[in-house]
Structure formats: C-alpha cells, structure tokens
Image (cartoon, rainbow, N blue to C red; front, side):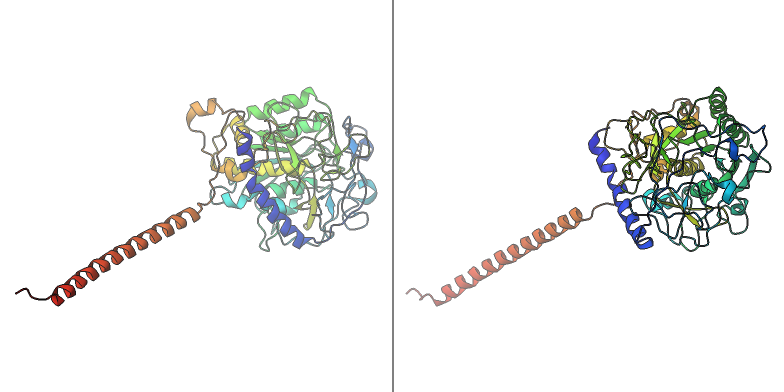
Length: 497
C-alpha cells in the first residue's frame, strides 16, 4: 500500500485524538506529577503467600531499565501503596485518580490495593480514539468469551451493579488458595473492564465490547509476579474454559518449552492469544513472552498524540521521559520485540477492585483494547479462525505511512470500525486461505459525501438557466420593439398620387 493512502487513513484518528484531548482537558486541567519506579516482577519469591514449595517467580527482563513514573504518589492515598505508578503522559492524568500498576511490590507491608471512592463520569480518550460505539449496532461482543490471564478479576465486578455483572466467570487460581475472584493487585480487574465493562449511566469509561463475557484466570501471586509455568497453565485453563480470546496480562523475560507448548495448544483449540510487547513499567530491548512466539498477537502502546508510547525512552538506565515517561514504555532503542498492532496505552481510565477509577498506562492496557476489538469482530463473524482473526486486526489497522510492518507500530493502530465492518470470510475455502496482511487492502470507511460540489454545480446551472432565460426575454423584447417601430414608420409615410 502506498504511503499516501496511509496518511489519509491517519486523518480520522488525528481528529479523534483532538476530540479526546479536549475531553480530557475538561476532565483534568492540571496533571499530577511525581516520581517513582518499580522493577517489573520485582516482588520475587519472598513475597509469595505460599510456603517453601511455591514456584520461583519474578524473573527480571534482560536489558530493562525502570522508567520514571508520572502520576500522583499513591503511598497512603488509599491505593494500597501500589508499587510504582503508571505514567499518564501528555498531561492527561487527573490528580484525583490514582495510578494502577502492573505489580504491587509492597503487598506484604501495605496489603492489597485499596478501592478509591471517586469514579470518572467521562470516557477515556481511548474511547474517543477507537469509537467502538460506532459498531455496537453490529456487534457488542455477545457470545464471545475473553480470558484475562493475570492477577485475577475482582468478583464484585461481576455481581450487582458491577461493570461485568452477569458476564464474569471465575476460573482457577494457579498460585495460592481460592479462585480467580480475588485481585490483590487490581491489574486484572482494570484489564477486564477495558475489554468488556458495561457503559455507565453517568457516561464514564466503558469497555470496547460491553456484551462479551470474561473468564478470569489467576496466574500470578498477590504481588503480580509470575513465571513460565504459571502462564502456561493459565493459557491452557483459558483454552479449556472455552475462551476464544486470551489476554495475557504479564509478560516474562525468557522463552520456555512449556509456555511455547501452551501457545500451540491454545491456537489448536481456537483461542487467539493477545499479549503486550513488554511490561508496563520498563523499557526493554529484548523480546518478552508469550508475545515473542509466532501466532501470538503482539501489542504495543501509543499515546494520545498517536506516537509510540515511550519511544523516547533511553536504555542507558534510569529511563528518560519520552511521550509517556518510562512507565508506559516497551519501546527502548534497539528493541527486538515484534509488534503486530498498537492501541491507546497511556493515561487511560479503568475500574479497579472494589470500584472507583484508576489511571492506567502501558502495553498491557493497549492489549486489553485489542482483545476487546477482537471480541467485537468475533461477535459479528464467529466463524473466523485464529489466523483469520489476527489477520483481520492487522489488515484493517490504521497504516503508519511507513514500510510495513513498522518496527515500532507494526501494521498500525487497531481500528474497531473497519475491523468489524470488513467482509466476513465465507465457506471452507476462505477458512483455509487467510489473507496475507502484507498484501491485503484494508477496508476504508468512506467519509460523508461532500455536498459542496453538488451545491456549486446546482448554483452554476441555475445561474446559467436564469441567464439564458433573461437573454431570451431580451431578444423577444427587441423583436417586438422593432416591429412596433416599423409599424409606426409605415403609418407616417405620405400616400403616393
């Protein structure tokens, strides 16, 4: 595809971002700023609630450096001290909404993340950017189950007036006791509501696919740390639970045979895995998993300006601020992770455990929005295979206007409107021959017809017809005048003798 068309396709998101920034300006005129960093999976085995037999978790990502976090300090603010704030970036974080972190390193000292009292009454800019409500008449994700494989999902979200009321299934807890309905970190709850949260009556943020079901699978400890064995078991449990989409909330640093086998198992069972290209609070220069495996849709984050979140992050240690500081970064210089698509992942608004609104930044939240978009697509085209679904999301993305796939943004920003509106595959032949994203021509939603040329043509035609009529009348009047003059001249002439 030519780069010219890519620029045309970027016009709509640019306008959407402008609208989103305007909405956020009204919501949060003053951005809070602070400092702090949290090492990804830093909780380690010492924080595990289980005894000596607990698995070793918390392996660090090689080549990673903690980023500078932007946002309100949460120690003692009712958010549980949240081990490192997520960066909102671009002045989009409201001071009254505490940040949601991917891990909770001080869980033993301060306990689980505390609910917040205030809920947002306006949508996040990501909702303005993606416009999922435009396709809700066609699909709201009904009949599709999305597994959230991470820290669990607060059971309260699935009951009463919760954001997932009637649509939350609590799967297994693979580390510790109980089921997946306890979310100490709050990260899994935030992801689940970004995927499928109902639309609040007060106009607050909603999920991309508000009729989809969520299967919660807890594959981390209470601090949010995990390892290859836990993730592999979580992926298998999600596939066995009937999920068509599996959102892996926490990446790990090293490839492992058990995890690779689980990815293959899920694909064979018809579940598309969606995973972030890095942790939420670090820049990385090496692949992470499962995003690094073939067949997994790897997602990076973009900011409210449409640029890769954290693209300016340094890998020299300490992390310098890019468009998202370091906390939303997974795009350090020289990073070798593959990127398939991007989605908003900076300064989002999401529900936390017990209710209330948190700000969330990082590629895991972008992956949640992609998973929700996939649910919308399957809600309308349930016969798509895993390969076809992934291809649909890539081939209908907003093109970056560069050679594809772009190292930083892959095939571009995911587009729910075009992805759901694209023709569904028909018949066994289509199922056996998915379209290549490298050659597919994206479906472009035509803009509203411009009435100016029609009005101009009508005006010109009207003027022309009016002018012709006036000329005709003038000619007729001239002829009548000549006849009358001739008649008067004849009457005045002398009679010949």
